[in-house]
Length: 253
Image (cartoon, rainbow, N blue to C red):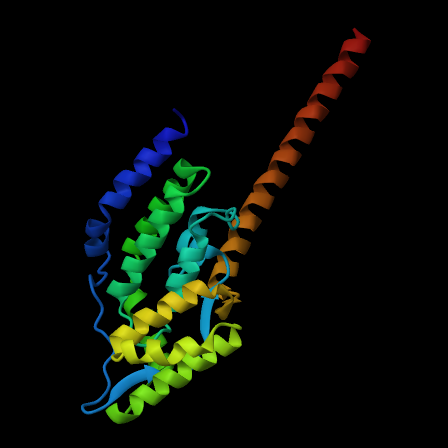
């Protein structure tokens, strides 16, 4: 029962995440990246990053680190959150697409998790933090600017084929699939969705990086806990001294 109460509370908060988003000024959908007229966006580089910490590090700012003294134990949905961070750097994606993929991934991960209740609790907290994340649009736009290159439409097919071929070769995959897939994913949006699936298939492509803000909050919380523990030790020592003094007086009686 004690464990159930936090889960119920978090579920209720997550259900109201749209209201939180409105309260904190978060945009419902971010404007998609667009090239100038008569240009088409293609993937410029195969470089995908995710801040260390899984879902604790998903959002900008302090993220979930404000609510915990240290990075929490790994959970089945952490890979989904790593993929969500990488999604911002996949040209042709949108925040709506990336968020929908995160939800689908997290739902499946929790359905298959050994401890579904704990996984659902973490998922609810993740959704709550996302609803308050005011940096989502800027982060996605910055990722798209770095990931995309605007080229002439007749150059785009060759660029997509080159990207897929390099991806398969780097991951020791079947590069013979590249030509057929490139022909099917013949728009920036379709290619972004395809690339997202391939990043999920080859998670080693996502490079984990340290987040200075995350480390800052971990340090602040750790210092607070260390100070509290130190104060408790001092208080205990004083109490022991009082007891010893009373024992000395008792011997004199």
